[in-house]
Length: 305
Image (cartoon, rainbow, N blue to C red):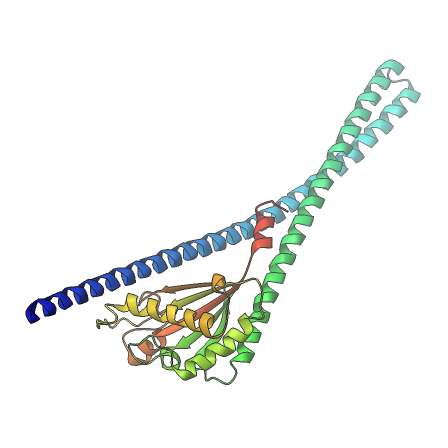
């Protein structure tokens, strides 16, 4: 009877362990899929912005071409007026019959009217393109100012930390808060230590007063392989660290969950060489990436405004 009880307990424990592993794997795959989708959206957004910048350059070229066309049309008008003058002089000089001269004058007058109409249309097109360019540039400038203001607020909030613990930079229109492993986690762990929570509380104080921003949390490791009971590889560790940061921001500092995306990048996005201890230490980091939302700018680029 005792052997039967022990056997039954072993079976229950094995079932529980297998179920936990399956749930953990599913969560990891869900997080990775979400991160991949957000990354693809960001790439698409950056591509659209690059395409619009190229379009702005092309529109500037079109404006120059249209200005050249205006100059040509003005020259044509001047030439037509001279021809009308010469034809009127010819009437008085008797070089042509009155009927023929009036016919030619009428034709030239119609041509002149058509040219002026074309000139008016061209001016309207130029004005519309210039207005669109001004709106687009104003939104781009507004976006850059908002991003720089956000960077400054974050940097001011984290002024008490050393540069070897964290850095705050701006790149490609986004603010990067890069926190080193030593600030946030014990080696090989995803449990945030007290000093790391202190830094995250200061970041959260800015996030909770800043509207319309997207927050990406990315975990990074060095290239040294890891295989423990908790983390089977660097993918698992980097994802667990990003998720742990997200939970601290949400559960302890009330950051809105819908703003956050947490993902692991493992060893595949290094910022330094992995061939030295110092380089590997730089690569073991967690980045909180902040980006003001681009809804208004995207609407303008898509022609919705």
